[in-house]
Image (tube, rainbow, N blue to C red; front, side, top):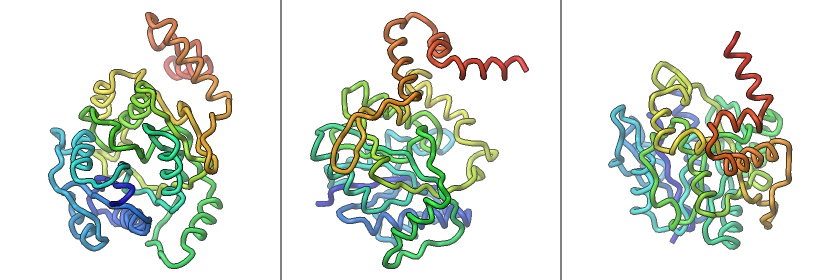
Length: 301
């Protein structure tokens, strides 16, 4: 029985660059020990790639009116077809390496209910990866040279025990908000939110948004507004990696070091709990005056 089931809903393999980075990502997953891979959806080229790379392919995933796969259905299908104790939803442009498995094992040994996440390293790539001996060390070196550690907002994978996340709303995949809700949900339920950034390098292959309607970023689409509604409002989709309760450093879980960003975030959550009757914008203007000032300057330009 595999330790982890990775599941994902890739984009169509029609755009050459999207096809390239998705192949790179999925192939990196196939090289991980003790995992099974489930690819979900009916997108062009997916069946052929799944067969070629030895991944399980499942067609029947519920979609919204625009044809976008629903997170709730993805979770349900993965759960029903998995033989693993751990599930991991991961975007199909993410390259994973063995340190990812090590982080999962260490987290599982220390917590019964948790969600594992991390910041990603953005990486420009224009050619297929050569997965020959030593590819991980060469990739790490190239990624560090580009030095593009993404800010702690937006998460590209969530790994969790099968017993968690059994009531996920009908979020649209590939749109903003649902990943923030995942952190909010874990915090609300009292699960450990484990940031493994200090111990793991997760590599995101950069791409444009030409695959989305009108080429707009994911946060500028109607499905994003619906995701926010399903999440319970703006307050529940403001959670980021800064809201992690733990960090995985080596083989130990530690409390995240207090930084100015984390302090501001903790202050904001505290004020919301105390002054729950005030508008969200008022709380944010108190906790983050500089950000609020910038918003006002843009508004009155």
